[in-house]
Length: 216
Image 1: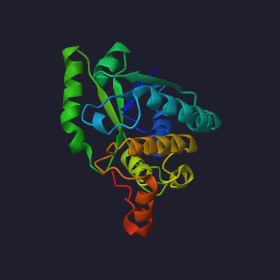
Image 2: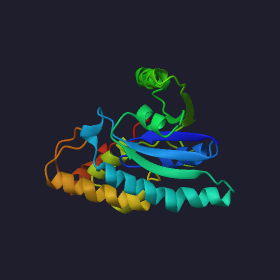
Image 3: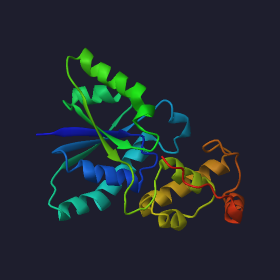
């Protein structure tokens, strides 16, 4: 029996995340999709840990599991949360394989964190394996990031417009747009952008300055 963990912030979960989960499910019998807290990204989070968990559960139940079932894949996908260090969760659940979505920033950017994770396993007298899966769904024809989704929502995209980008599910698009509007109304900064009304931001975006989804 092979078990693996796919950790991430998932704020919000994207269809690229779904693609990685679906492919990872072909490699193991049990896959933990671990919604975690990254201290370096915490200030940019739009959603609580529980909200992100709920969105993951929705997308897995309505998008991923039906696809896997149609292909005869029976991987047990478990959505879990942690506010601690991913290796500690892995050791507690007897999981040694970590799945990572490969971005165009390359493995080098993650190398320091990977060394820390491996070191935690060594302290426990165990080995950790890492498998990288491209974070780009070839059917989407683009790189997809949670950052891009947040920026488009902050710029005033409607839920339907965000959904039409192909980056997130309809459920996630609606939740993200609603939260972005709440944050703008409360004059909170979103990804370093100055507070402004969604409609005025969207008008500016339509004139040619809409933020483009960054390549990961």
